[in-house]
Image (cartoon, rainbow, N blue to C red; front, top):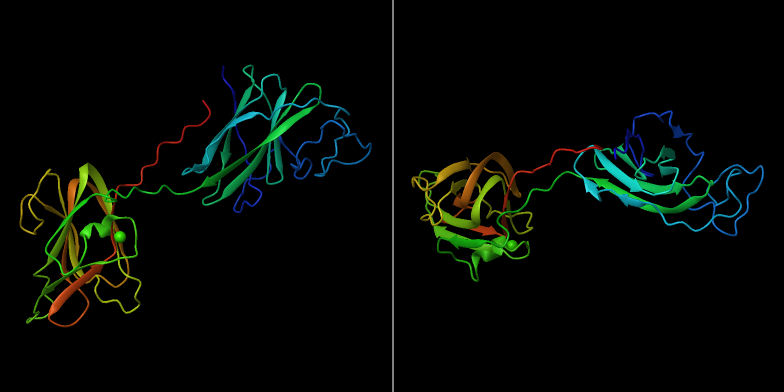
Length: 319
Ligand SMILES: [Ca+2]
């Protein structure tokens, strides 16, 4: 059975940025502020007392109402979209009330006993709603609380916990610390490199990560120890990708690898970039030059993350 589908401008209690005016089919703001049941057993109407949020019955609410369960509500906890779908079921009810941010919508239930709403939500906002059924006898059910957060989709770190290979290093332990999801320990590579002719991006250390399967990659993040004077970051570096299952060590002129992105003068601080999506089974980072002086290039890396593209499924509204 087709359910009532209405787009409602309901704002969360702490919502900012809601620009739509109170639609005509919403109750007047503050006329029916959600404050819990107003029709519970033992309550009595106070003639002439305007509705408020103290649990006082409205004048047209019966003096005694049976206990009725809250509507069954289906809504996401979070959404990447600018609206979300709220469905509620309360068989036998006359209306279902959705209240939030000082606005109230009362919608007649369909023959199947439900409603469906598409509710706008501002970027980064949290919407809090109370959903209550209203029956033909004027009595109200208990209320169901709904909280929905709008947040941007988080791309998945495809490197987390995956197999790591690297050139010989000066570090102790395993280079797997760069894919353990933690930022506490750095793994170190260091090699002798005289830049007789200056800054050269010639010799390098490398680290390669097996993503475990061919994936679409679209981002790289490299993290370092939290030292304000840190010089052992990737100043000159390159990211390569391979779709082979067992490629040789990454190298600039190896046909098993293709260049994704390179930087010859990366500034200090966490390296965090996105690039055009491409397929890769392995990724390889070539580390040419740090920002220190001396006859060694030394790199200390706490974590390497490879991100897939942020995927947002199309919004599906009330059908
Ligand atoms: Ca780590």
